[in-house]
Image 1 (tube, rainbow, N blue to C red):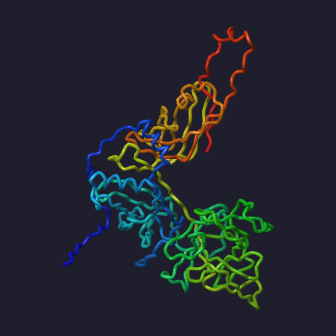
Image 2 (image 1 turned 180 degrees about the vertical axis):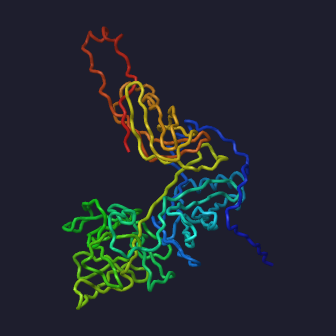
Image 3 (image 1 turned 120 degrees about the vertical axis):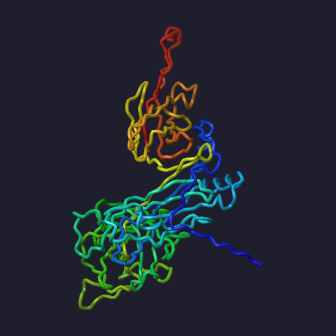
Length: 475
């Protein structure tokens, strides 16, 4: 006989138990930091990919966000964490990862994400109704383990709410809706405007394809009209206008499409003389430069070239098929990285601090490093490699620390012969490590000249080892 069990999925994340297991918290040790740095940064990384704008739903309609927000899990830390839990006696269900995503509104239920056994999940049924009066919002992703241990709440970047794509000629005065060179975009295609037929430009296994499950973020670059086809190209600043020559580069793989001319589409006609700025959710076509009316097109899952038909009565237009009509939208990426350096902690790992820049102040005996960013809290300490620095919390966007002397890394060094790079990390008082991706560089200082024979004995009492080497911050 087969026994069946019913699993009830809650519409909202269940309340979490504040103390679900015996967790002994302690400050990070130098040995633990060394193990982390030498072990290849076994971080747990959460990435939220989403569009920069969302179309509002009116009445009873539900305009699901397109492309759908996606949550990705990267890093070997997730596997290691699960193995640690199971080795510690936790059940399979208790070690299971649970996640919910929502628009940060009490009116709308959060949607459950299935991340077990895979590294990504798309939230395909999120929408924002006209009763929600916010002009901007952020997605909220709540994560925890099946045993109730809270991982934290991870937020997306800011999303702008729009009523519908603008059909008016765009002006750069409304730059928030325009698309800048060097920014990230997504492209999707809907045959006969049917939602179920939506496919996204994506790169997989070294090939461009049209995926119904995953979408790619592509950097769109303005290039000179005279630029020839090459793996290397010169990019231009400014906003993308119709008629511009562009390059699309996959932000994950670095793969690029040939030079393209972006053209406005109106009723399956590509307009050859359009020159206004490209705007969010516009229908566009991509002419393959220096070809005979060839356009970037999809056929099922394949990306192909489609030859447009000239319009006899309107020489400034070319007829394209459904597969060559793409909707363009700007995208954002929020990334969070953390590692429990001394084992599991009671408190959520969020908010995850983010360091934008480093600025060195002073020098000589005391050099100070200023960190600018977001989500700073008083319980954070700055670490230079495996050395903890004296840290001063200013506010949520600013911290200050004393730069450790080079002797803290090389105890018997008197003069630095080569530049020494050390990674900068933020560490919470309970041992959670937040990698910043930034480094600090100790730069060489000329050593003393070799004294002449006989003078050494006279000079010996006056020679003093340097207190500090000159230091510079570099990204």
